[in-house]
Length: 200
Image (cartoon, rainbow, N blue to C red; front, side, top):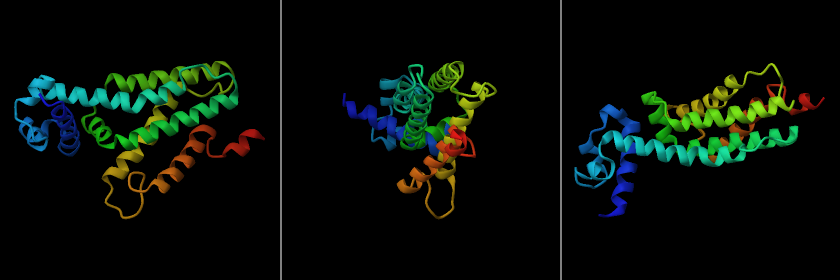
């Protein structure tokens, strides 16, 4: 069998699930879009659901593996905590931009999956370690922060993918995406007052 057929099915599945939803994308349409016979989904994935799960698994690795490695160890100083958190947010955002169609599938289907739990658990562990070390305010609720980070980044991806407005957005303009990310990292890490107020 041609190994590229499997990749084509995954790419076709991403596009059709993102555009039409899981229920709206038929096996026949996915195979036609992938230029594959109708039996290939069953051969490689067992079923349409198997294809869907394979897409989510690929998304999880591509989106979360690198960012989670950045925060795998407890921070030793406040500066290290902030730097690694900034890098984590930046890498997560870039990965979500690169995987925007699959992220749209997740939101559209309201599907929870192991990868999202890994993201929340990894970030929560890092923030808890930082809080225990005194690098983060005691009154901050770790579980709220993990949700805010992903919601803020994810909402921008969804807005950019669905807006009809003219003008730059994080998916169409790299310079705009860099400015948006820098401003949001500042807000997420330092609050609205910014780093100058924190250091005073």
